Length: 153
Ligand code: C2G
Image 1 (cartoon, rainbow, N blue to C red):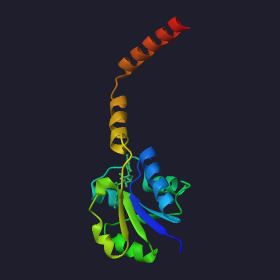
Image 2 (cartoon, rainbow, N blue to C red):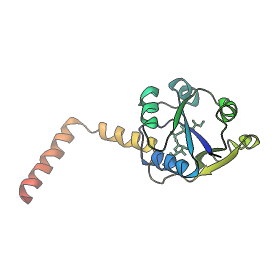
Image 3 (cartoon, rainbow, N blue to C red):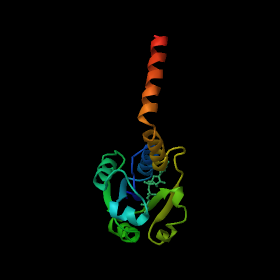
Image 4 (cartoon, rainbow, N blue to C red):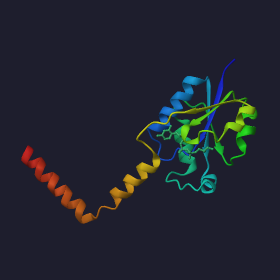
């Protein structure tokens, strides 16, 4: 019997942590379904995203490990999704450990190790730092790099 697994997430600024999780799901089942949080639902989650839902869903559905992308619009939809898609396993990163144990009534629940040292929050922080560098400092930095390049060549 083909095994179906489901997960949910925002997947904003898609990175290797997201990819590793989806690859793990693909190793655990025959069919991988991903609920991508809509922009409206992220507002309810208190999350601001850089990439709009349509693009995040398109990126996730283009990942070879993913068979189906559905919109995640509410916290409550998981129970009905498990029934609708005849899901065997619900899996998500350990940052949600224990939060979805109630799903044990209808399917297996698995919390997976996260990929260390990468997160959308950190990427946003680095971007903010990078963008906060003044034009003057940036051009000075480039001048120094240019001088170094000339000295080394
Ligand atoms: N993840 C990971 N390693 C990282 C970063 C993220 O394994 N370094 C995993 C998370 O644990 C999660 C998935 O990637 O399982 C997607 O992460 P987010 O986009 O941050 O998802 P989140 O906003 O937490 O949404 O109903 C559940 C929510 O939709 C989860």
